[in-house]
Image (spheres, rainbow, N blue to C red):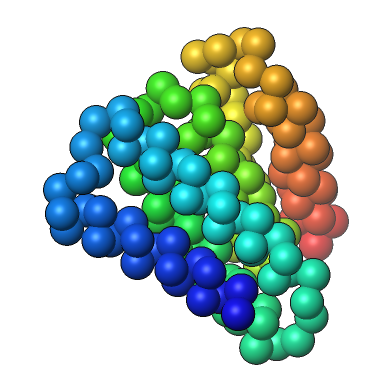
Length: 143
């Protein structure tokens, strides 16, 4: 059920693109809001254990990241798009150890704070994400 919700988000975006309705900064807002909705679903999927759901969640996270990367592509200065993409990468990194996702999230959040130092969501998330990067580096050093 949850995977269908994510798939529907991706299909809706695809049809908006095909109709030429995704252009300019407005497209970034549309893609980001779809991404946020899909991330909510992804969080629910994470709570359900079982290899099949986990595989679906990882696949869905990849689709969501693509959508959010497009949102940033339309409007590179959108803190909303940057922090949502960072959140998606963090969720994916916590589900499946994909090298570089935590570091990528740090870069996205730092970029957002460069654009808008007062952006609360990024300021709140950055210390946690940096901590994950440090933990991974420490793990590597211990090996």
